[in-house]
Image: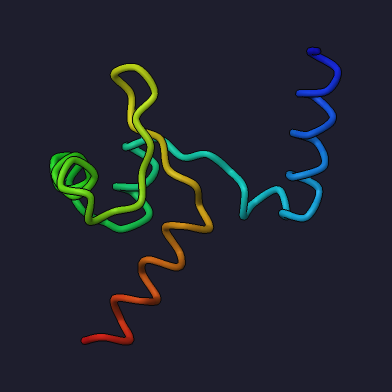
Length: 76
């Protein structure tokens, strides 16, 4: 069963370049967006920033953050 999961995971990740699929922390997103970490936490908690909570830790996919940023600049 673990082999099936590993195969499925590797197949789905093959189509994503390493940097696009990179998982970022709150600190890395804050640095990228040049905002305080508290702003990243707030936006993630409110569901305004694409994020996943794993246990008590927030994680972000680089590609999702780029798309979110581009979407915001097109609307403003």
